[in-house]
Length: 62
Image (cartoon, rainbow, N blue to C red; front, side):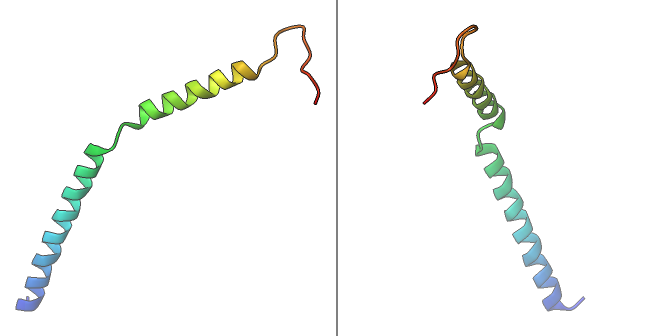
């Protein structure tokens, strides 16, 4: 292998390791999606309950 090629490969390997480390740090810092999804669906359910009309009454027409 040419000396320049080996040096470029070493730089690329170092760069890939740095990108992988940055990715792991970013994943660790991100809040879990489960809580956000649960809160979102709870708000949707609450909105649907508020928008539902009681039994026996008709909605007002605008």
